[in-house]
Length: 298
Length: 260
Image 1 (spheres, rainbow over the protein chains, first blue to last red):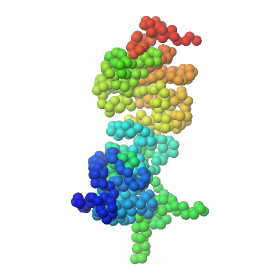
Image 2: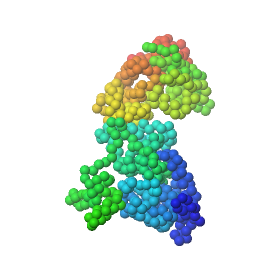
Image 3: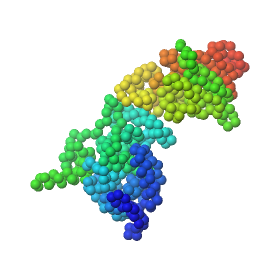
Image 4: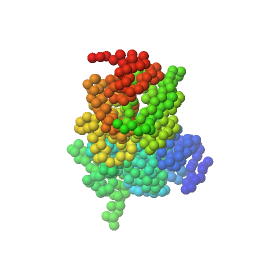
């Protein structure tokens, strides 16, 4: 059995070949998650509660992202999974294998080829377009949580747009460090309404969320929340008039591909103090190196 | 002191019950701008329940509380939407709690505590917020260099003064104080009272002050209300009641004060 939508097919039902229902979750669960996703897209930045399921992986490993991905996957999708920008880290490999096994979809490491990208901690350097969906794994969806522990209270604050507290956090940063020292999970205002936690991506990636062509979906499994940023939506990072939002900068280029405007990881090379900085986005780095080789050959 | 002819707050027939027990029974009073109303009585007389009703923390079973907003609108509290009530609570009202820990945000610095109400009402300039915070620390006699310290590192008296600064920074029109000097030693109490008295005069605040300490009431309040078992047994000018109490309970209360 299958449901045909625009540009692809949602496979449904048990597949005796894989031994799983398509993409692991049963159809009622996928339906419930899709309904939450529809609501999330309709109210950008608003956290929609959903009945998160137990997944065959521990909480904190992307159970929310996996459920979202499972609910939106179609048979002709090409899936890319990244963890800290890399395609070859444990979390990325295991989730990719999970969907290869349960949904038998094509997978890729190339950002440009992917239609669905599940990510932890990074947004690809390559600009995404309308034909792509970016799924984030979110540990703590509530940006106000560390300032206000009561869920009843934070919901009220969202409802009444009482976001002064968020600036209290930024104030504390400046008073302690002289600048806004929050470097990841940097709070953003979505379409001028809801303050949202962009998941623990570095603030370097915040500007990419603004006016992005791709649909951005956020799943928090343990906290049972789904939220979304539709394509071409305004996403503003919070700041002070006299301390404007700034992204991280490095005083060197990527040691492998020479990229100057990419997010760099510091890699320790030996125990003699040797270190290098290279792109955290492995696909971006590889593509740049291949291009450079090609140009050199020509 | 200017007293406008329109009351800031009107309380009409307010009754608050816990089950069948009436904590406040048919309370009536008006509060005019610039006035300090002291509410005294022993523990369990309904003072704090009354204050909680006024602050909107508890809902009265009968009667109403009518507040005149800065824009002149007179509205019963029960008719305010939650959004309106919370907006008033961070702009026009202030609540100084008995325990500073309940009124302060203990996890953030003194400066951020003072700045919170400013940021909640739209201040987005770090430099200005900090200047205002420094200013207010001075007003409540806390050293400037403590601005980045956590309230946990402050003494009880300093915490209480910080709480006052945090509440008064947005220039509220109505200040509710619940035993502001409770738990402080007498010399610290005296300084705090001095401070509150001068702030009340400077800013022309309207205050409702709940206390069981007659000395505090005498020093700060212009008018006094004596409560016993949820009832107002006597009300009038502070000096009048303390010098010449009429109700038997007021007489008992006045005569119970230790003379040093």
